[in-house]
Image (cartoon, rainbow, N blue to C red; front, top):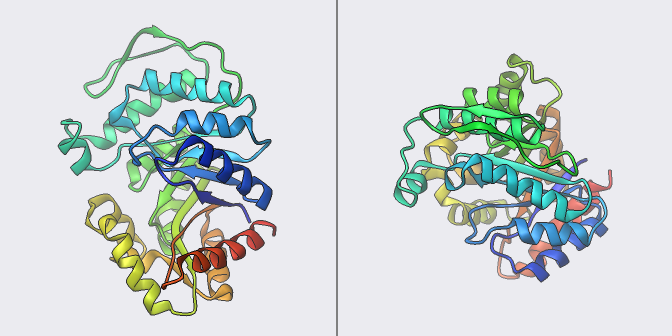
Length: 302
């Protein structure tokens, strides 16, 4: 099973290298770096990439509104070059209205259209093409072209709705999800990708995970830790697509056998990868996280 693990946002570079090196030694296929942690993860990812051999390092995600697509593509190429090996994956997405409108003071009225044009530019540049796209949302005019690209840089789109799932199929290697349970992948995500001729594209399923004997406490903990996701319209839609309404319902919790079955359920539903975000349950947080990690390591080796 392809299982990746989260690297905390804003983690110092030395600690990132330790975490990525450890994850590779433990057999994880990937490490995913959230983009909202108050620090740019790409420099630390580049250093960690040089310190490892093959583990995939991906952004999950970099927000489109905070960076022009030409600069985004340049940064991706620079990170891939600095890593000195293949394995950098560039996950992109528009973020959410409260942040885009409240912090960046940008309009979120046409987030889908904005992201589609953004991805056209980044995808074209990373493919070595000359890009000349002008739109009301984001443009790259004048025949822009990047320097030579040292390694392929796969793109993933944080796609939850039909339009961006089509964009994921057309302009990237697939989609990276958060808060999408097995039902939403089976009934919503996978069919939308297939309808856009996206068979074979990656579906990276990101969810909170905790191995515990106290499922009720785990749900209560998840409700507090992930409350904010339930307030955002995009996540409300993907939760609803899975027949649930709250983030704690999406979290994968239970004993070893139950969690293993639920993770396999994501794969059976169409996910190609699991992005696990362990969270602690109970008073002994270290022991709780270690228990979850032990199972993930075991499953990563299967």
